[in-house]
Image 1 (cartoon, rainbow, N blue to C red):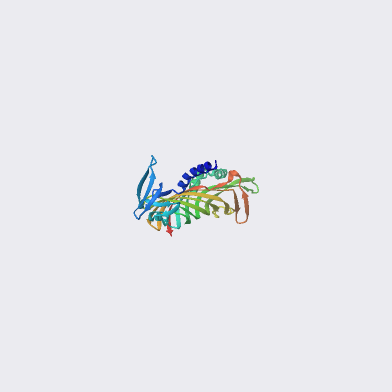
Image 2: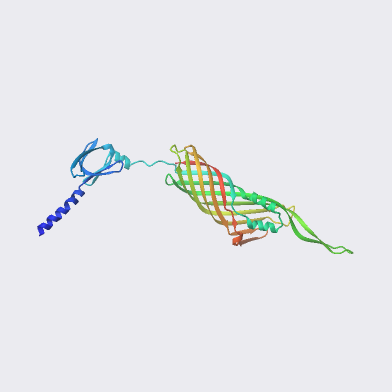
Length: 325
């Protein structure tokens, strides 16, 4: 009984021992050939395999088609395999410095501003003209990025948006009373011509990541996607002509908020270290708290949801970028 058990165990172990001692060849196409290697020369490897009918068949494979091979579970690299496994990494530019400039279009409806102007008695045509001036502004930007891989970089982005608008309107300031002896008392309404110019600025700075891809084999054209989230600062300067209404003080409004942008850029490389590009981006930010100051007073105000200052916009610009190792 014991003898039969030992024989049965040995019979079961024979395939396992055979599998463990089996050789294999890995081709340059990453195909695996299970076999028994008979001989190895500088030009080819001779091996044998079982065919479908379990007959042993001898074969040859050129050494230039072999990446690596195993004999008795020991790994051996061919010259081809060494070159594959030790392939040098593709060199690429690590640093990118860019400057941008162009235009911008504000996305806000300005409905609350329009209501305030209507309350002052300003005509709708002047309100529409003011809003048109305000929507179209200028955009400037700069960024520095370090690329961790050929297609992924991280860095810092700065941008400045500025716009201005001017409006002239008539402002009523109540009634002026006259009284002369022997005459009745009468009142005359008084009006002042107001000339107002408002300047708006939004500064932004924050970390950003860039993804970039070559579009052609000659590496002349490239597509970039850039995502950034950071700090935005709002500044509004309302200036009045002092010769028209001396009692009106200039007003400064400032605020801070979180902002973010997404940019797409198409680049052309006239030189390996220099590229020129066209950019389109969306910038989102809303200011919910502001500080309002004049020459004599300063107050901080939390704005209700209907009075939030939305300075979200679309930017379009041209860029020059410098690339370094």
